[in-house]
Each structure stands twice: as structure tokens, then as C-alpha cells.
Image (cartoon, rainbow, N blue to C red; front, side):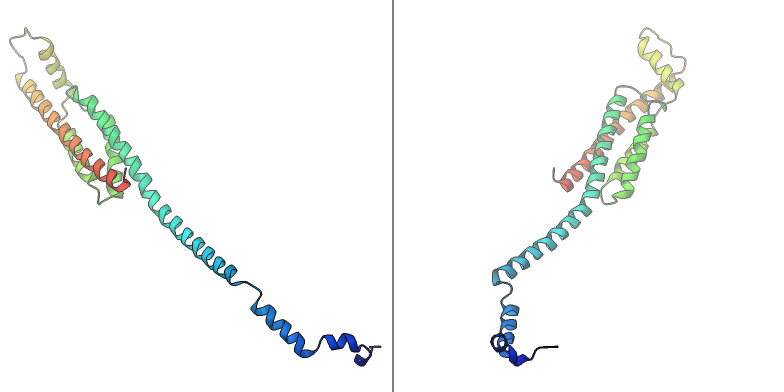
Length: 191
């Protein structure tokens, strides 16, 4: 059996309807302090802005890493040009340069606003100035044998000397183009 409500007068008197409503209203409005809500709001804004900044920088990091790699490839091209500057280059001598050229072409496709195409064009014109092995041998004979008065194949030697001078000019053009591109990359990466 359920006891009668009237049998517990002291207990029921403490929990009247009006008293319990007042308690419910005070707990709903005063559950969080004002400083806690402001702190939570500021923390939420900080978290959201941190996520956005991270996303933006990650999006910028990928092209920056590619630009750094391309900068390194251009350095390798300069080193290879230094090796080729000491001699009259033949088609066999420019194999390493051709491999680096393909990487520079990929960079030109990735970054159309950076003048990698100029570097590609000047390297390709340099490759056109290479001489044949036979012509290089004739040139070496003439340069080492200073006592020789009669040249058997003067035309090929003159052609080799002309191409050798053109190679020197093209190497200078390539270095200038590479310097311009590296300067642009430095500006973009703010080195």
C-alpha cells in the first residue's frame, strides 16, 4: 500500500510546487558562469582559426617543396654546365644535361608563371651546338699538334671552332636564365 501524503507533513511541506520551480530556474540560469562561456567562445574561435591557418599553410607547402626541388635541379644544371664549359661538347657529353632537361620541362609544366620555359629553350639551343665525335677528334689533333702546317679537313675544324664559340655563348645564356628563375623562386619562398 502506498502511504497517504498527509502522513508525511514535514517532508511534503519542504517540497512544495513553488519551491521546486524556483530551484529549477536558478540552476538553469546560473549553471555556467559568464567568464566560462566567454572563455569557451574564445577557445572555440582559436581552434577554428588554427584549423583554417593549418589548412592554408599545408596547401602552400606542397608547391613550396616542389619549388625547392626545382631550385636544386637548376643548381645541378649549373654544375653540369661548369663541366661542359671546359671542353667542346659532343653529343655523348650532354647526356646528363638531357636528363636534367626533362626534369626542368616538368617544372615548366607545373609552374607556368615562372620562366622555366626560357631555361628549357636555351638548353635545347645549346644541345644543337654539339659537335660530332669525328669533328671533336680533328679539333683535338689541331689543338695538340701546333707544328702541323697543313690541315686535312679544315672545313670541319672551322665548323668545330664556330660551334665551340656558340656553345660558350649558349652556356652564358643558360646561366642567365637559370639565375633569373632562381631569383623568382627565392622571392616566392622568401629566402
